[in-house]
Image (cartoon, rainbow, N blue to C red; front, side, top):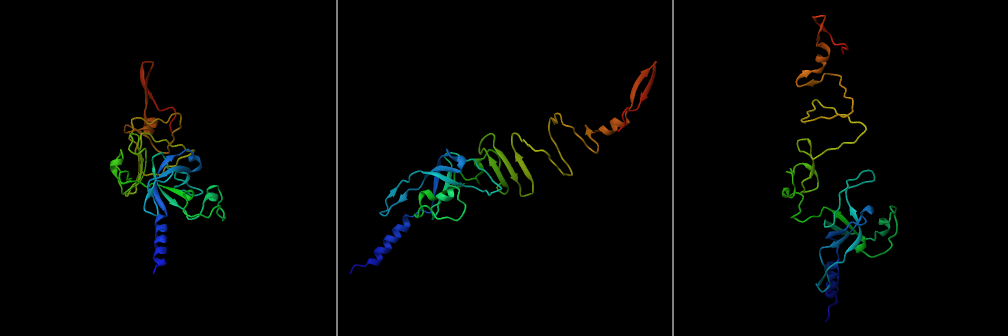
Length: 241
C-alpha cells in the first residue's frame, strides 16, 4: 500500500533544506554607499530539490548593518571585495528600506527573499582573520581594544585601549581640531625635537624651565651689567614679575 506520509515528509524536508536564512557574500559594488546599501554576490550555491546546485545571482541595494544608533555611529569604510554575512529577513523589508520606521504591512508576502537581505560587516575567512597579527603592519595586542585602519599598509593607524588602562595611538600624524582642550594631569611629558605653538599665547601660573633653568628666576633675579662713564654698574630687571 502506498504510504503518502513519508513522501510528504520528504518533500517538506527538501523544501526546508532549500531555504536560506544566511550565507557569506562578497561586495561587488558600493555605488550607492551614500544610501547605506551595497551590491553583493552570494558565495554559496543554492541547493535544489534534486540536490543539484545553482550559483546565486547578485543582489542589489542590500542594507549594511554596522554599529550605530540615532545619535552615534561607527562608520567602517566598505570596499569592493569585502566579505559580509547576508541575513535574509522573514518579512519583506522594502517599506523599511524606503524610510518607514512605523508599524506597517509588508508590500509582498514572500519569505526569505533576496530583497529582504541585509549585510553584516566583518564576516571573514580564516586567512583574513582580524585576530591574526600577521595581517597587520604594527604589532597588535589582542588583549587590547584595538581600532585599526589602513590594515597592512605602511600608513596603518592603530588606536588601542589597553588592558592596563592606557590609551595608545600609532600614527604618522595626529590632528586635533577643537575650540577648547582641557588636560588635567600630574605630569605631561613631551619628547619632541620641536614644539611649535605658532602664534598662540602660552600662559602658566607657575614656572617654566628651559634646559633646567628657571625662566621666572631669570626674569626676576638677574642683573644687567653695563659701563657708564668708565664705571661698571648693574641694574635689576626693568619689569619684575
